[in-house]
Amino acid sequence: MAEGRPVRKATRGEVLRTERLTPHMIRVVLGGEDLRGLRAGEFTDHYVKLLFPPTGVSYPAPFDLEAIQRDLPREQWPTTRTYTVRAWDPEAAELTLDFVHHGDSGLAGPWAASVRPGEEIWFFGPGGAYAPSPEADWHLLVGDESALPAIAASLERLPSGAPAFVFVEVAGPEEEQRLDTPGDAKITWLHRGDAQVGEALVTAVRELDFPPGTLHAFVHGEANFVKALRRHLRTERGVPLSQLSISGYWRLGRDEDGWQSSKREWNQKIEEEEAAALTS
Image (cartoon, rainbow, N blue to C red; front, side, top):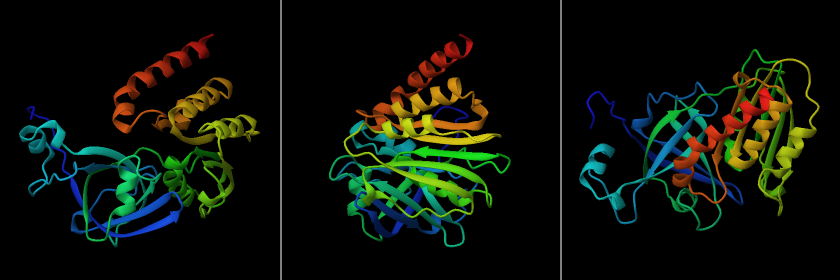
């Protein structure tokens, strides 16, 4: 370990219960003594980095990622997957995570489908940066399934009566969920069908008649549609970056490892294109 580098402490979560919310969305609620005092709740886009050991590999207690990476070969290191916190109950010390599940593909989805109460999962976090601003005149929330937990949490945090336009794209009507909010939110579910992920979201935002006043927007999901909407909001609508929470959670054709390794370069290219467009 490099001198002065802070040691990241992993938290042990115990699976308390699971629930299938829709055909392709599974809820997992974590608890346990390690969660007491967890610093969550400030943001509505809180996320944790779940640590999945390879099949057949177990680690000595206490869990120490630094020691694992120092003492074990790379193929025995845990794989990290990032998930948004759907809800945090500090009194019960319960952390709720929602997982998109598409059969046996992927890592976290199949885990959520098969995990049972009493099993454990280690994680880092939570991190986060966004919550609906009480000073905004209106709000815009846009995302696919991966952003739905954060959108749902954000809707619950809207100031009473706050105007909001919400666009959520899912595979079909069977994937819709109940969304509660004290705000004055117009919620539109968009059904993807066989179209490209995010295509309907881009069209919906482009066609939206923006009301006057200060906007606070949250736009997250597949990187390609997020890129298109960032360009639209920044260069065509003139929305300052300070009023946007906008980023790709994932990218078609890449797993999380591949996406995270290329995300900085992807974002840098977007910023360069955006700067050129704004000054032309």
